[in-house]
Image (cartoon, rainbow, N blue to C red; front, side, top):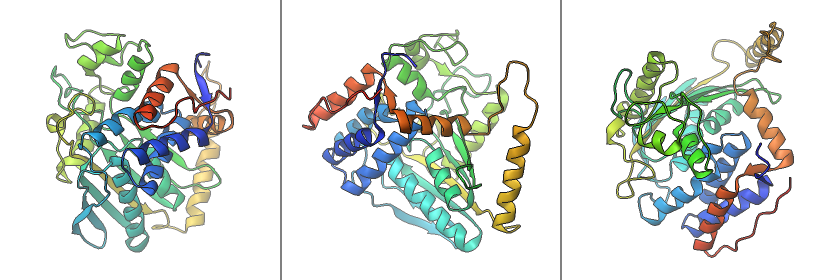
Length: 356
């Protein structure tokens, strides 16, 4: 970690972010949900989806592009499914409610699907699949995003980075939580690199002329690349289908850019598919088998130069434990941005202290 980064205590950061969202017009409970979510993303090392989003989230609230009240409407419902019209509320609040409803239905019926339309950027999908896993459910989560990736072989923006996540319960701090963009990297990481005046690795994106670039501004004007080439494009298509075409949300090129289009709501979609982990065998038996596969994966002989084999999401889990102890590292640029937002709402700057 660059030694210019300043480590901030989790609770201190969460309290500040909560105060900002209360000042922006959200009620206290909703502000607390968003603050917890954003700080959790930073805890897990998903800094592109953490407190670096506070500025744009509050800006869109100020402009009336996001509804400050959480008042979703159930459009369709069956015993095992539910479609929510999010009424343009915060994507984090809607997705939190959506996964809770999906888990509740799955507990009753075994399997449940919840779709959301008229939503917004919902942050880090891992938060939602973690919730399901803690409730002894297996979950798949997807969301679409504004276009910044071409269909395989194309040179025009059509799809977003379209992430998906899954969660599998194991217990004892060992739940498997996987979360990935279907692009080589989440676009938010390129945005964060630009904010921090950093270069990006080759292979993340191409310029609008179709040339490889390490410059964030060129990458943001160009195209991100799908992970795994045509295979990533295929998964991107599925995520788009589940998140938008299935739910009635906007898709691909019809979604306004989160940062650049400050005139229209986004109408993003989310989809959660949740199943009880005890559908086919007892819960203890399932978890014991999960423990077995984890132990046997750990015993696989590593390749030369590889110290250990990680489980899906294990790196993020370990990073979260380290940052819980030692503080969350934030760049001076992000700290200045947060304090500027705070000043806008009359929240005294200089709140943060380096605990590193």
